[in-house]
Amino acid sequence: MNVRTVTLLSVLIAMQIVLSRFLSIHTWNTKIGFSFVPVVVAAMLFGALEAGVVAAFGDIIGAMMFPVGAYFPGFTLTAFFHGIVYAMLLKKKASTGRIILAVLIVQIAGSLFLNTYWISVLYGSPYWPLFFTRIYQTFVMSFVQIAVILVLNHNVIPRLKNVI
Image 1 (cartoon, one colour):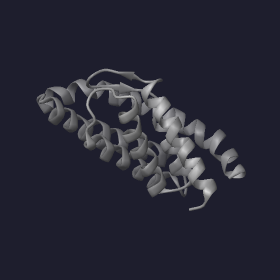
Image 2 (spheres, helix red, strand yellow):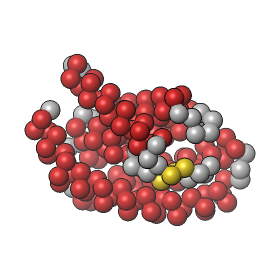
Image 3 (cartoon, helix red, strand yellow):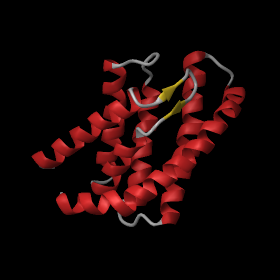
Image 4 (cartoon, one colour):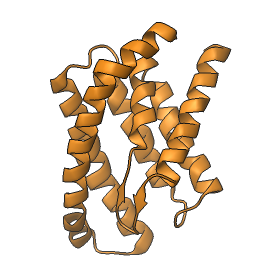
């Protein structure tokens, strides 16, 4: 890893923090926003470890600097998982099918199942009622993420690859 890569990853972490903490809608059990964009960019440009680091460091630093509720390491693990999944499916070939698959895995396995579990543990809420209230968020964010990643893949990533 060279200085340029570290610098670009740092910028992506900063973007992830801003998008997550200031440009997202938060409630105690849901979050709707675009903080996935820097993680996806890191995944498509650099790979799994880098995308996981952007997601995890963005979560840790954001939680320390701008807390929204209590910090819980389970959310950091889920964020790292999101970066890994995006990179595994989108680094080499980001076809529409792979984009849809990546988003569905991230949203269903990560956001719906894992994050619901973490919220249940953190707040002592029953898992299944919480799970059912989070289905709507998962549904909405799946469509948002697919649309945004398709735009990134066709318009932004090719330009960034030429610059990097």
